[in-house]
Image 1 (cartoon, rainbow, N blue to C red):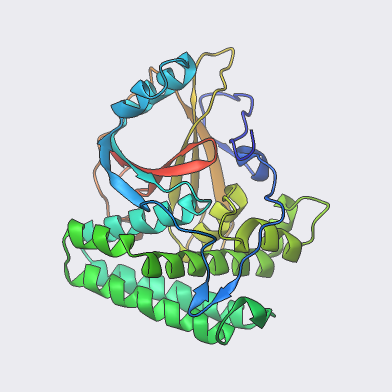
Image 2: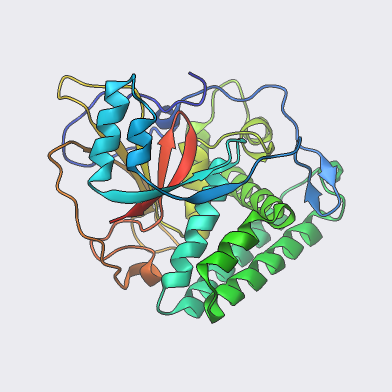
Amino acid sequence: EEGELGDDEYSGEDEEDDQDSEGELGGSLPDGRTDRALTGGFRWPHARPTALGPQEQLSELVRESPDNSIIQEKMKILSKHYVLFRRTRQDGSCFYRAFMFSYMEILRQMQDKQAEVTRLMECLDMSKDRFSCLEWNKAYFSIDPEEYFSSVVSELNEVLDVIAAGCTSEWLYQRSLQESFSGRIISLLRLITETEIRTDEFYKQSIPTNLNVLQFCWKAVRSLDAEATTTQMRALTYALGIPLRVEVVDKSSTDRGVLVKRLDFFHESDLEKGPLRLTRSYLSSSTAPIPLKQGSYDADLLSSDGTPMLTLLCRRGHCDILYRK
């Protein structure tokens, strides 16, 4: 199915380094999809339902697949490690929306929130410098591209400062439901992702041979209804220095039984240099859960066991947010 994650052959219980990122998420590129200019940035194609749902028990997803024993078993496996999930709108931007909202939730719980905001803004400054070095068709912007980039970064910075000063979870949720805010932030995340892909030779290996880098970004990144694959996930994670875990639930099974594919995106060294590693591992019904304890690594973006705090559930190419026990 288009957008469904690839069912790679199981290769053992131990984690392995994976450089062939595009096969993880599979799916063809959207055809005939364009982005359009509008005051303040990009235009959404049409009216949308609620962007973020409330937290729900993960067991609810077991009941939603009564006719698929493999999906049910994988959800039961995840239920040993996660207790809650949050649905996101199925509009092609689910990854970017889930990524940013989950990050802001994690930021709200950090001990040194302001230090993390400062770190992220430094990453955004570096991305802006690279963005400014690229050519952009001004037809996609209602204002100067650099001015647009800077204005949305400032808007995001204001919200992050409120979180750092102390805000309630309800304030953050309601702010993220505001379409004007979420739409501009998602367009910014897509621009950051495209900038990373266009300015780093590493990503060329993940681009289909029938497309050049700019064509790939036009179809698979810039368009607001283009779903993210591991190439986009890797690029955004690297650009912002935010580790990411993705739990993959699909219909595949192996000769070793039902397994949940787990993808971890993180830096091998520090945030300024070194390759971004994509590590694949698998969860089985016998995999013991690790109690969640936030550590001091990467300003609490990693837990005490060195794994990403930001965790998404990916089903048929769609991303929701997971909450660990």
